[in-house]
Length: 414
Ligand code: UTP
Image 1 (cartoon, protein in one colour):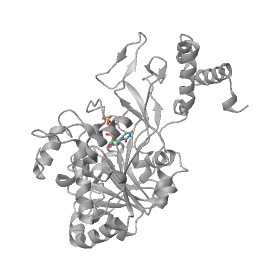
Image 2: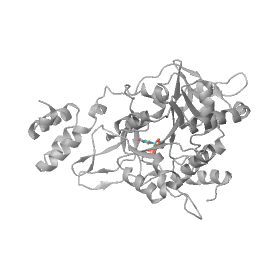
Image 3: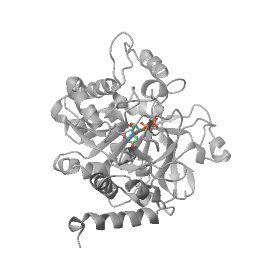
Image 4: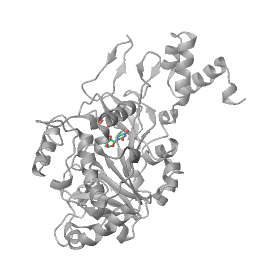
């Protein structure tokens, strides 16, 4: 019998058996409280969810052996800037470069109720995070005299509002026909005991599946068929929350193209050995990112003969990928990482709880795992003060305040 023909009792039996095998009988018990229509709606939702994440076998993968990765430094870039930039601009003019904005995050640390890009960080005028990014991109497209197609990844939660916001702001002066929105997938969230949660009556709580599945989400939403018909050969993927983010940076693109690498990553020199940033390195001979908490003391403090840290370059979530190589990643199942976050849920009494502190796990694919699938990657050093102003937290490090200060120093009126 195919699934389309399956009747309600059979579907209920199948899904409840699966829930029971995964230790989720509280959901089957909850179902009994609902009328038939609500039960069917909830069962249909559960049927769309990837419950394999609940399998204890699905644990974080083991890491290989690490080695430092050499980076193209600021000095080397300065010497070749004009040439790299010309190469990059030529690629943009030839329609070979597209950009992907990762806007599906929930911004739980910042406490966002809406898409993070909609946050207004201006003081004497409105200045939205999305606006900062679009201004940065427009500087490049003005220089090139050609548009860069921009693909904006959203989540189920913020898709409509993001689209409406761009429309309301007239796409921040960018060409509408060069912007596409696509939605990433959701995965269930679990409480600390590994139990599925409810977000509303009859609805299992889900969250966006991380920033690593963007290429697969482009495939699932039909974006890739469009991309494959275009001349785009390179995709510059970047995070929404760095308001100094240089997008489709011609010098970076040119440096990667000229190096012959199939990918590139913008990196910043670590401010101190113990700075909490993922470092670009080699893992079993492949480009990889080692998280700060995975580094041993020896790795953190190891130095090169010239005195610089061996594991020196932190990633800022701005990568360039060659599209033909990305195509090869589609068959690969990206690993899932369990992340403890603040997740809104419905308690046993039917009340919506907005936790003040992390309370549950979401499952995320990570963009850095896509880097590991590349044959090689050019680490390209940037000046922190000019290109890195992330907004992650409400106060303190990487907050609106610190980002504003960096914008001011770069001559942006707030
Ligand atoms: P973060 O790792 O900072 O996650 O995202 P977040 O969800 O935005 O914020 P917190 O951790 O809850 O505070 C880094 C980048 O990846 C995107 C974000 O929008 C940001 O550009 N992202 C993250 C996605 O596009 N989808 C996701 O599922 C997660």
